Every structure is written in C-alpha cells, then in structure tokens.
Length: 338
Ligand code: KG4
Ligand code: ZN
Picture 1 (cartoon, rainbow, N blue to C red):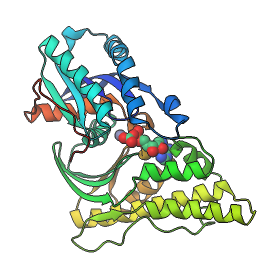
Picture 2 (tube, protein in one colour; picture 1 turned 135 degrees about the vertical axis):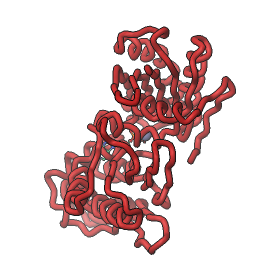
Picture 3 (tube, protein in one colour; picture 1 turned 90 degrees about the vertical axis):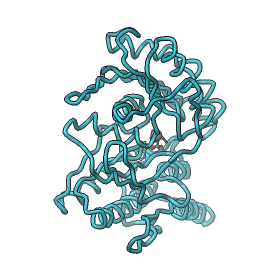
C-alpha cells in the first residue's frame, strides 16, 4: 500500500510516500524542508517560528512528495502523521494538514509516535530487519533505550534524567564556536582530536540490576562549559579538536556500556541505532564494534534517514495500520507522549 506521511514535530517539514507490504518496504519519495537556517541566528529552535515555517511549505512539499513518487491523491491508500511528541505548534500544522488530506480524499488516517518513527527508519534501510531488538533513539529531544518486542510493542528500559544526547552535542558545540545545530560539526571536529586529552564525567548513571538504564548529559555539558571558561579566565587557549573528541568518547562509552548491559539483561541479540545522533560516525563505529565483539547484529540507517523525515513515519504507520490504529477527524497533537 502507498502511504503518504507527514512529519512536522520540530524544525523539519517533511512529506513522503512509502510503499509498504509484507514483502516490500520502499521509499518512493522523501522530501525534507529544513528550517535550520531560520533558527540558526537564535541559537536553537524557536517554537512559534517553527510552526509558521511549517505552514508556509507543507502544501508545496506534499506536491513534491506525490510528484516524486509519480502518483496523485488517487494513488494514496492511507495518510500518516506524527502527532506526538514534539513542539505543539509545529505538530498541529502536520496533524491538521494530514487530517484535511485524509478527509478530503476519503482515506484512513494513522497517527504515529515520532520516537517509534525513528526506530522504523531501520525497517526501510534493512528490509530483512524484524523485531525483537534493542533500540537506542538519540535525538535533539530524546534519549531512550527501548526493547522493541514487536512492530508496535515498545518497552522503554532506559532514558535520560535531563538533557537529550543531541542537546548535549549542540550545547558543547556552541562552547566550541560551532553554529547550531552543532552535532555534525562536533563529529567532524572530533576526528582530528585526542579522545583522552580532556577528563570529562561519564553521562551513564551506574546501572543496578532490575533498574532502568539512565543517562545524565547535563553534567557532561557543564564540564565542557567549565573547562572552556576556566581556560579563558587563565588566558589559555583550548584545543577544540581534543575537547570534541573527549566529549564524543564520553558519550560513546556511556552508550555502549548501557547497550551492552541491556543486551545482557534482555537476552536480545540485535541493536538498532536511531535518531539524529545516530548519524554520528564515532557512535556508529563504537556501537558497531561492541556488537561485533558480542556477535550481536547491528543496524543503523544511513544518515539521511537518521534525522527527522516523513518516510520513517510512513514505515511505522504501516505496522500501526495493520494493528488497527486509525484516527478520526478529532485527532489532536500532544507535546509529550509515550
Ligand atoms: O532526530 P533529529 O533530527 O531531531 C529531533 O527529533 O530532535 O535530531 C537532531 C539532533 C541535533 O541535536 C543534532 O545536532 C544531532 O541530532 N546530530 C548529531 C549529528 N547529526 C545530527 N549529533 C552528533 N553527531 C552527528 N553527526
Ligand atoms: Zn526526531
């Protein structure tokens, strides 16, 4: 079936067409209009500005997605939309547009949780991948370790107590003079640095048997800020590459140690990395290496499917649809959701 999907939970407006069936998972089009340039001068996403930018381009990118897939509304079998979690004013634009499209064309409407969508990006990248598996979703707003039991049965077994991993990357990047969002810039900078040069605290909270796997990224972020401020007060320069590499090492060690322990405790043998931070080359290498050593499967989508996009929402919508999930014309958006 052809699913027309919408994603507008943060600062990317996206529309996509995916063809999904028991034997097919194909991205027919995946248009992403990024607002990064608009928000950069504010140093972060401004919610109201995001909502206004979504509304300006959602009709245009929908046309581009349909044209790119070579179909018209007649060729669409279902409409999918991210309805939670995210910025409420941003979500409402996608929800209302999707609702109108579905209503006008007499199509079923399937609401999708954004985090589930990030995980589903891996179904598109790896057509042979099926649950159960362990997923790490790390983005600008979320950091979760999830036991994905079936396509629609998710058990969250790890989370962050404070900042999300991507938020920490962006804030550390800011200290190093990298413009928002600095995650990709940190990735590049870290390649030229010594990961053992700067001593930084681990963002992994020690794990106790039977308890959730917890992260705390705010201490790591503060340590980088203090390191830079102390050097500035002393009139000393800092090696930005070394700071980026040491920060990245701390994140990679924390994530791999929690994921390794979570593999032990769940008995699962596959790991999926998802979310914008999964584009990080060092994290991909570190988690991939840990999985190889353990003989576990390792799955991470290409960077283009790690960041926010509508194709991943369409992929998850297919499984929600099979499970009977449908929304009526009273569908609303929720800023926070499971
Ligand atoms: O999933 P995403 O596109 O949007 C949210 O749902 O938040 O994630 C965006 C986050 C930003 O914090 C961005 O800096 C981070 O992902 N990111 C990266 C990399 N590419 C994007 N973080 C580290 N390394 C990267 N290569
Ligand atoms: Zn996201």
